[in-house]
Length: 187
Image (cartoon, rainbow, N blue to C red; front, side, top):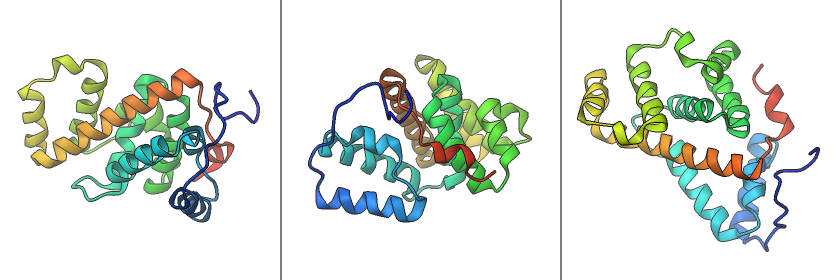
């Protein structure tokens, strides 16, 4: 499927001036418009909802660092075998950490990385929320508190993991393909 963004050809809607400006900002900062945004561009309203949620979770105010939020995205995507998100967010982990090997460990098996107990607890929670959400109990939240997370941090961990579970499923359903540029970033 060379050159395709996804298996669905939905076209592109008339984009609002705000969305056009957002795409220009992506081009300026990243050197590309992520294919996930292009995939959503068939409906400007859906695209804006996606980007507003993404930007709030990944760039908004939080007790979690940007790297920790990207680590959650990668670990969830690893469990779900999401090619798009592993490629795009794996690149972000490499870039934010400055360590390509660390980025690869996050993609393949975060347990291979020698993480601090706090980050391990965060990622184990994201794993359980991904694999067995109905089995999350107070002891799981207590483990995060004991590791040093606040209730607000727990909300952010859960929201980030949940967003990427949703995003992974959409990407899988439509065979979304990552931008080629991600493969070479921060290596």
